[in-house]
Length: 97
Image (cartoon, rainbow, N blue to C red):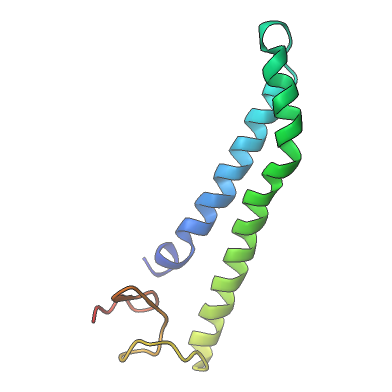
């Protein structure tokens, strides 16, 4: 549950971006009645790399926080484990305030 709580949303962003890029790639290769959409897909495709790239950056930042937390150098707001608080719940131990 620990890794799902910390890394679930960034990995969903990565996979959603990759699926969207594959869909745009398939759409850009279509002809006939979808030719108008193909031009739009070719224009949007280079910008879709932002989703997986931002997800990968988010994963890297979360892994850095996990590494700092396990070393004991993370100064979060959790009174129980010094983890990072997300709202009223700790992302590291799940403790609620």
